[in-house]
Length: 182
Picture 1 (cartoon, rainbow, N blue to C red):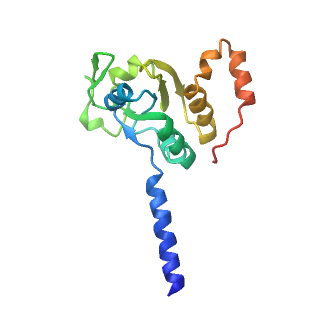
Picture 2: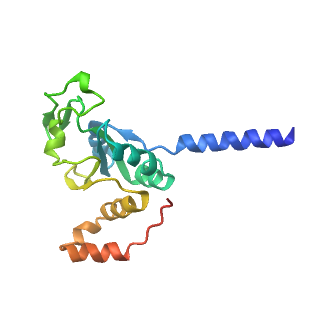
């Protein structure tokens, strides 16, 4: 009986930690409002429902405990469907997807106007914004936890502002030692 109680306790504890390991996703409007109260950078996952690498990024990277903790502590995280039908206000302009077709919801659809505004042309793309909601950089393609760690830390600490050339980035990249576990 004592062993059974111990097993149940371990299962419950691990279930609790699995639930806790989620990024706190908000809408772009919510992130912009939160920035006004407590300035933080924004990390926006621009994805589509049909994109395989987007699903891998969500499963492998955005559920990694190290990534979850770092993002939740240092960023406002936004998920944005690049071909979705949401109406979004950014920088006093309202963006929509006038060509959206509901019957195409899980297939390739029309590109959202905000997707175009942000210059996103591949999925997934992670768009980083500064504390004033200005775009810092769109990071294209699938990133594993260690690859994403480099950018999360570089932008959070404003290291990118010291980089004037590709050589500056290469030096930073070469010296970077990831600590996130895979």
